[in-house]
Amino acid sequence: MSPHNNKISLRPLFVVLSLLGAVALLKFSPYCASVPAKAGVLALLILVFWATALIPEHLTALLFFLLAMVFSLAGPEVIFAGFGSAAIWLIFGGLVIGIAISSTGLGARIARFAAIWLHGSYLKIISGLVAAGLLFSFLMPSAMGRVVLLTPIALSLADHFGFKEGSKGRTGVLLAIILGTYIPAFGILPANVPNMVLVGMAETQYHLSILYGTYLLLHFPLLSFVKAVLIIALILFFFPDQPKELPEQKEQAAVKFSRNELILSLVLAGMLGLWITDFLHHVSPAWVALGGALILLMPGVDIVGKKAFNQKINWGAIIFVAGILGVGGMINHTGLGRTIASGIIDLLPLGEHQNFINYMSISLASAVTGMLTTLPAVPAVLTPLSDSLAQVTGLPIQTLLMMQVVGFSTIMLPYQAPPIVVGMQLSGEKLMDAAKICLSLALITGFILLPLNFFWWKLLDWL
Image (cartoon, rainbow, N blue to C red; front, top):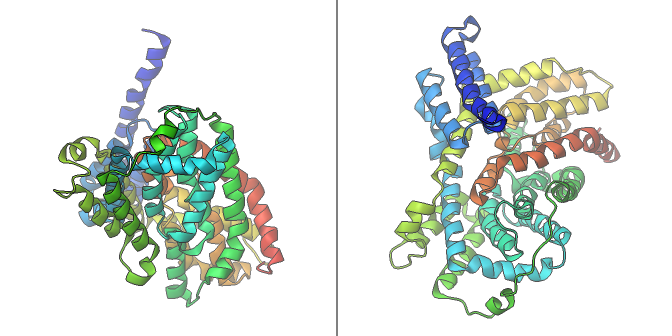
């Protein structure tokens, strides 16, 4: 057996030993007698498996469901809550829409149209896609909706420019649209779920209203614009490539719309309109996506037929995201999230008249809490602690609330953010590729952007 094969054979051994060790801790260790302690052991095991991709993501999710139920860490309504969440139905709708965009040829047509502006260089392609993703963040309040809509189009663009499966260029194109429409959107108030959780918690806990313009001025310059530029630079660094000219593209551009393309165009236009105007009708983006998917699946329409539905839907992606949501639910239900956040804050060197140390400490505490729980859980567990933090630091509660945004917008690994996971599943790209960008961006944020953001806040008289 070659050394290469020996190296590969260690992976299942490590997985088995990790599982046996975790089960032994859960069953026999006196240090894991409490439910929160057991939840912590299981969450750590699952997050390590996801972060390292030791086994496929959906298998790790199934492992979580099994162990959480066997050791009674929470009821089925908590552990399996992900399957009833809006996120799952957004993914389902997105998978159906992705099949339709690919099979009808509409994706290729949109790609040819978009390529008119992106044609020229790889830098122009990546920059244009990140800019488009950021623009959609202003138009569509649902990050999941944006990812579901834009990822199939990005796949077609990758094909148009000759980026084959497995190429760095294809990965770069897809990361540009997925990360570009999610990470910079933290500086736009209604564009991501954690932002809105913070708004709701601030109103219910402290009767504070966070205004759109104030939030945008405080966060957009560095957390949105500069991060968008950094995403472009990191993609060019990690995934360099050059577009290839495909000679048949000009001939294809003149082909008339087919029946299926016209129907799909109308469905997508209707969905986009409903997503943009959800503040008027209050219908969840998930049900809009499900409705659009049902139209495409209907007999007589048959844009996505029975065979395509059975063979091309990525059910593993649905199980994976349900697992992520289940882990987050377990952490919150058992009180582990609040325990972690309180423990982190107790270790911080907080005090009055040291605004920079307070700012860096609370921002980093928010980021670490997001890594150990999930991003939407950060404002849920940290906001109730803001009152006591205000007494220790002497800072206004609203300033402390805004520091959470600096932290939970700093994503270290993709599993923290379901929209990134969904986008990578829809695209077929590896989560490890997204992790390279996320972790690099987090390090740059910690060492450069956080101090710069502090001086920006000083200039605005927030510190």
